[in-house]
Length: 171
Image (cartoon, rainbow, N blue to C red; front, side):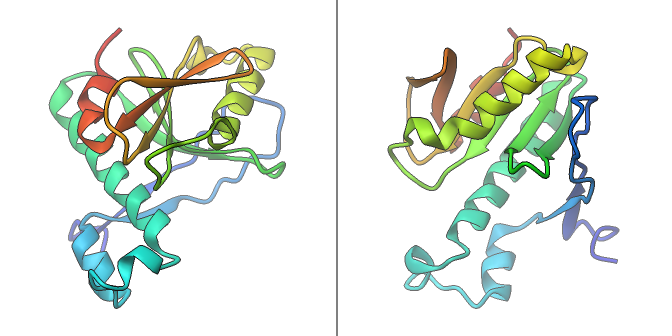
């Protein structure tokens, strides 16, 4: 009922042939972060210290990615990745150039925040996965504008929520 009424969306996992045991359970996202905060009993005063702050931020990023994919007119699909070895990437945007996106509630992400992006890129390269040829990687956080991190040779763009359209722009 919640999915049919557009209150929630299921995000399917990507399970390209990487020779790993991959988690295959879909993630559930609310379409309205305000409704989600209300259901969790969070107000403006309790939000900064809430253990749900990270998942709420990820939900907001998911909504922006969905909207941008819908209006872009490009043939793109949205997934997530998690395997039993602990490698996780919040979002994979595949089709017409692949993007790997990690969400962090910080204004100053660190290289260790991009470990999942680096590991998945390496796994895809080693397996020859056609879905993830030369992916662009990014961390969407509270920072704005043009910074980059480098993690084991992988360039990771650091972007704010308002920069999602540029992040997904065609190459």
